[in-house]
Image (tube, rainbow, N blue to C red; front, top):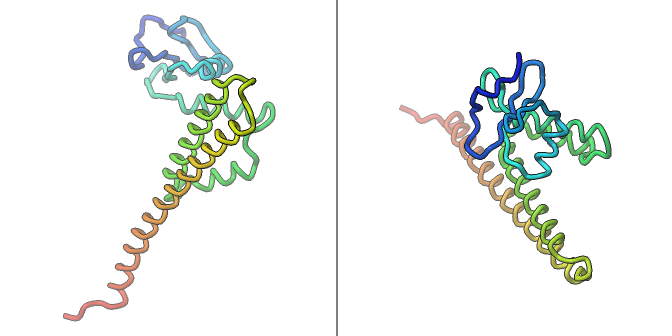
Length: 178
């Protein structure tokens, strides 16, 4: 199936549409050309807004493509995640804490990006030990606060779960007499 540039992509305005065809080829509707995962990675690094859509169904495949890029990066060079870290992440799938962990990781990564940006904005000449300590201290404090929030949410979920379990158990053990 050839790429049809006349077919409008179901991407929001201002978002670059990439179509994925059944032959696994990616078609960039902006440049009217086929691209590779390396090109998509370059778009990510350039902070471009894009969406990858199934050419037939219009289904959003962006996450799938991003996961493919991560897989290639993890197997190709120096991995970012240890086997233990990956196993821990897998254990959160299907767990009641899955959403909290995803939110925690996302916020922590954003905090790290913000820290990196502030460090990059400062000139190398002005980077002195106290300044670096302030940046890292701020990052650590943000990370600690996010972890505390996650613990509080976990505690609330546990109370709710145990409260529901306890009331169900109590009614089983102490049925009301009629």
